[in-house]
Amino acid sequence: MFVIIDDRKIVTSGYASGFEREGVSSIGFRSPEFRDWMGAAPDSDLLTIEGFLLGSCEDRQSVPKIIRERCGAPLIAFSDVPSLEQTLNLFAVGVDDVVRQPVHVREIIARAGAIQRRAGGQTEDCRIIGSMRVFFDGRDPEVNGEPFVLPRRERRILEYLVRNQNKRVTKEKIFGFVYGFCNEEVEESVIESHISKLRKKLRARLGFDPIDSKRYVGYMLENG
Image (tube, rainbow, N blue to C red; front, top):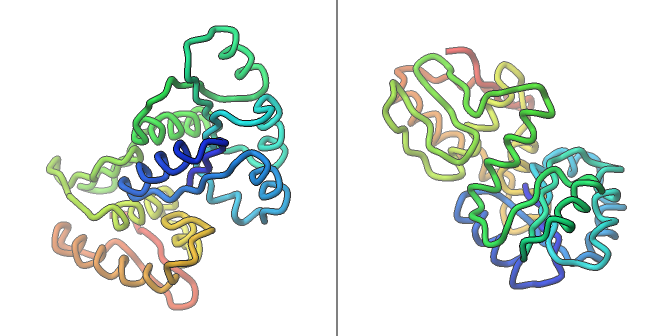
């Protein structure tokens, strides 16, 4: 999930629509709402955040500190006009990256992923599991070098399972990653349907099912 902080509704709704098209969950806040939410959000929700986007808002120089007190997810600031002084000030208060608007959400996803990899000492932007290559920047996976086109939700589930390879993850955690923690319009049971379809496609393409499931415990992507 990406969190967008901007006092302009047209900005938060525009980026939210862009993330939705990519199958990535997001939520937009005006700065006063964000401050209240950040102070009350449970740690389990904060763990699902893939990045914060900081736009035009009240006293935005103080927002990075509020974020860093509770979450280490990538923080990317928007710049509406070229300004070296503004950019340097944003880096000084804890922003990880500054980008000029407009910017495509796929670039935002890629930048956030690069920041996470550097923070964790990792260099990979994809992972190879047997004959399958899974990307973390929104691209469809490949099998034997050929595109393996998946619906956006199934692709996101596969990415999450790959990130947690050989670890068992619950349906609730997968739901939080794919749909976000504020989505009350979708039932968690939809994850079971997505995974069932994904397993069928993986079995047809790979010749076996790499996803192990245990009732009440969760799902795990095993080594191919």
